[in-house]
Image (cartoon, rainbow, N blue to C red; front, top):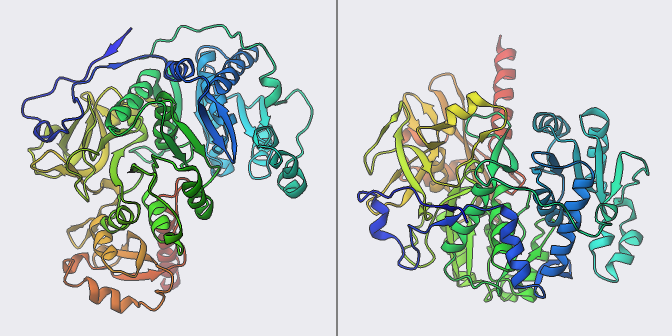
Length: 574
């Protein structure tokens, strides 16, 4: 079996002295086909629950059988080495089955977010060379794919139904009560039902996989250069990152855990941690098609998940539930926060309520994604993204001279070295060369290593606000605003300023019942917490703030709004 060893540690690596005693930084991981991790659990835990979907449970043996049938079905459609199959799905059994079925057939999975606009879907389908797409016959999904079938290179849609994966009697009641949500799907050569895909004996033809070279997943991202492009994640990248996270979860016991699967599998964070790592560990995934606060709280109370990855906005919503005292959160042993900076206030509130460790991690699509995390056993530094996971090195480089490594304590660009770093961007050699340099993934994030080797992020390089010659980091301003007890969420961006060039503007969502806070009161609150150049020039209160498809606060919509407003005002004055 091919082994992937960790990069050679240097005796000067500052995190080694503080590394948790329960984790071996030098662990050698197996570079294997990603589906082998799942197959081992099928062999070891055949009769144990693998998926719980809205009350219907599927065992590891049942899911394993469906995966083999899907693999043969895809091969019968011509999918082999390097063939692309898109998944346009929420969290559901068909998503897991199709994902591993494509990989066993020798193909490459291309994840598509159901929240993408049609132009973005069209770009990604064409760019990735995707000819087959798997989706559900629901009005929130199918109409977009029907349009793509007509306008893009797509040749076939494989369409599943909710009825085929719901428990009795929900499967019978769904068409009666949700009929308007079900799409009419044509019966023609361009369409195939998911049932038909699986209607075979499962005897697929095994494909020889080179884990370091063969692409398991094309995961689209804005990346570090702002253009939507496909990160080529190999079988080794994803299999090793799942193993790295499994080692980090020191409280995890194989074959007994229950994973709360609320984060969408089409996003790299959930794909690796909620799906791949769980299935490697023989855990049961409690899958939710989307984050609905009351549904999640009820399942925590009833189904007793033990691990719950999430994003900061999710933990803020859970901690702020008006009836939080009515729910039993005691089953949860550990929660991992990623996708966005975790405000210290949110961390402390949730940990107090759930009486468990909420630790922050960090990574990018390009690193499969996890590169660092605070330890479960060991010092958990609030505000830090933690220590490198085993086999990973964090290097801080000079943004002006990427070849120059900065000393400990100095701020610069965070770079990642490790076996989970992508092969490159699909058909984007220039973007690949810009992001992967000297064996390092350049993240575009500004940060530093403290005296113990913990990494702290200051901000995104591209989010930096240059105000009157001074650097203003939005995250620093956001952290100060979060100190106000009335604030639930905040996003800070740079807006055009004819005098300073740029100034900070804060968009704030207040907690329920806290609607009386004024702009003047917030500025007065911040005056002893921020420098004069850092104080927001404007504060705007909103009922909701823009978010990405995983619930991460998003800046781009606000930046576009402010730019449009500025240009309109400029034109009016001309």
